[in-house]
Image (spheres, rainbow, N blue to C red):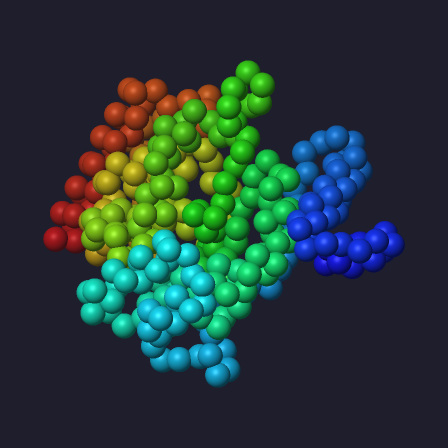
Length: 297
């Protein structure tokens, strides 16, 4: 792509210039969109075919050896995780690699042997914007809705002094999600992840599910995330399927609203979650879950 841009400009693009050429192209594109909206904020949607993490053709194997990854030039971090699997006697099969998020040799994936060029467009575009959300085809196929990959999504708004740039989220949301992204990223590694971490991550993921596109108020989001990050939903979610968990979370919000009708709307209006409100929210959540356990037990 950078070479084609150079051809349009009537010049030869050297390999070391390709990144800056692409960055310049996307910089002009985003600035143009910004100006067309009169300087307002801009949301861009980039659609790109998802590179497969599986090998195809002759490179596709039922199981790979560590040497296959070494020969393909995988990073030392990836090789270390693979060595840990081999030491535990776990075969390096395509399903195992997918759970680890490690592409198979021969897949051509940007994080494997596809090289930097395979992911250059996404890399250069995301480096220009204030934040990005990655929607993943594998997560969508697994039933995640919306299929957001939190380990690959981030915001740069609010980084540094808040006097210069506004924060991207409310104080109430930050209070219940301080370590959420890190916890989800840690739980995505089946080698280093402890069972308790996986259970906690599943609870967090369950409250992030939104198959119904009806907007959820800030207060309701805070109530569900508080229950998940505090560990109150660990056992409840672990013993239920997706449909039962969805109903449980709906019932939880209804129970909190019935017990304290003004609590969630007040959080929504103020964007704040005081210590007293957080304690009250935990109390109502515990009472609801105790009733649920008594009924199911």
